[in-house]
Length: 340
Ligand code: UFG
Image 1 (cartoon, rainbow, N blue to C red):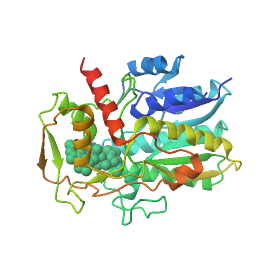
Image 2: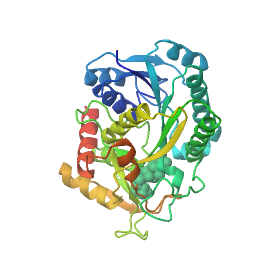
Image 3: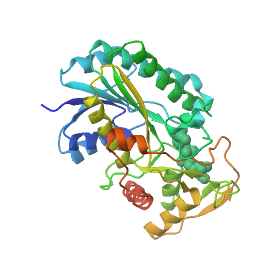
Image 4: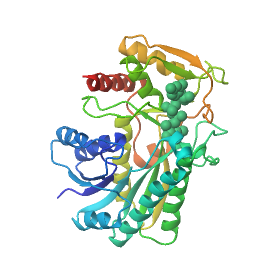
């Protein structure tokens, strides 16, 4: 019987792609999702891509009764990938308690339930936001953390600490916190992808919605930074690559002999691309013109960041396979299908 992996937030952007990759790797995902920032029809799309039925528990993963029910449903549950969290940077400054309550409580309840049920493997969805603006590039896992720019970023730092402290206290849990850089792209089928609600905060969904005519034009937030073309630099990673990194992390934790283990691992491509390069590549690979203008800087923006990927290669035996052009082609393919 296939090993079952609980995927909290499994109907979300990264979670949905991860469920598909888990099935491809021989695992059986069990989704917990309250659809607060995702759509139920995505679960059917995952099933279509995976070629099998996917167990779904609709509800909040901060609810101990629900966690007990899910964990009690099978003795084949061997791990959890914890995606479920609020993630809008701007909103987190306006509604900090909403972010602290949701993101911290779900992690705490999950840890307690895992320990009680002797489920040892946990992959946590963290972010390169924990580094802030790093002094040295590329960013390694040892790069000192800066104070987070937002309550959202702080919840990622705090959740990492909570997991680590619990493991240090002797809990028999093996955890990997994956610090993602900037996920973009969509499944090549165009069946699953990012579904931003309202006006997108992130660059690539804003670009695709502009190209689709849903937004007038993209504003580039500053072109007077100390970078080769003056625009900010990020490490953009295809969501399918990122999903595969989660499967690799589950495989890795399965092979760890200790009962008590914690690692932080960067997940990026190792390449930095500027906002201008993203625009130029999007236009070129999709053969269209994007309407954009240069605007003022966005407060709190990191100028330049990209990952050192030595650790993910070594520990997870994983590296990104898709490049920026492929990711931007897939983002546009998804957006075009959404428009219909
Ligand atoms: N940008 C624009 N115009 C836009 C949107 C973004 O020029 O309309 C620029 C930003 O200024 C930045 C780059 O595009 O230079 C990327 O911005 P995103 O908002 O897409 O991504 P960020 O790197 O700023 O933020 C992301 C996630 C956060 C996470 C952070 C970690 O959205 O959740 O990475 O650094 F905290």
